[in-house]
Length: 388
Image (cartoon, rainbow, N blue to C red; front, top):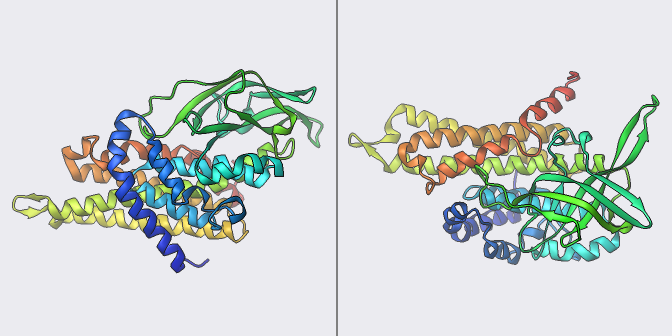
């Protein structure tokens, strides 16, 4: 695959980088400290077209692709992972399922505001006993009299409780299916549940270690009734659709991880050149120089990995294994670079106003979200013909 970027892609990455430094970065420490997503920043992201990057112009999008979206996510993650995950989840988990699987009526109802950044949506998959094992889903949706009745709970749902959150696409058990061997399996489908529907409760936000400005809530559904037309995609195809969504999401998380690793690298490089100890910059010491050289190598390999996976995805080629490898390599790079950067900064790196301290807290979830790194190893091993 080609790793050469077009002039348009170069300009996009530069534009988002400038936006991140001038608009996002000055607000990051305050937003993190207050555990609040800055909605005015989100609005500005919508104004410059970030929420519409991979969508066709007919829906108000920019006519770009997944590669373009990941460029933007990487640029934002350099300075603020909470803002980067807000964009990633808004598109990959909120708008993209509507665009890909929705009916014409569902698209007309929801897509324009999602693409413009005027609305956000959540993706209700994870439960207390169902995350990587989506087949363990317990939330149910029963169809009767032209209505779905949804009961259950979800956790760790991004963009589900903001002032512009409009709905959650809920993964639910809608029946049983018979396997070829005669055994039964759960039939999983996706149901759109709008905010404000009686019985749908957005619980108080989590007190998180990292991504503290990202909006994340548990959700409960008690006899929530929505029209039969709120089925998203084909009944019983929920699990297959989730897999596609998660595979794409792993590329985006790899891009986010690359941005985080790069942010730590840049901060460390500047500090190593400007911080003097015993009369010389600390970067003149071989240990510091070699540590930063390793950080640069991690950024380079991570970027190659996610860009290869994104190009394959956009070309319509198989990319599942490449996405898993990119996510594995890049999230590991983000965590290692955050640790090294914090060590280089010493005491300053332990203060929350320091960007590297926030990256140190934020980066751990990159090894967990969109499928833990252990799950990525399972995917990669299976691609090699190794059963696990």
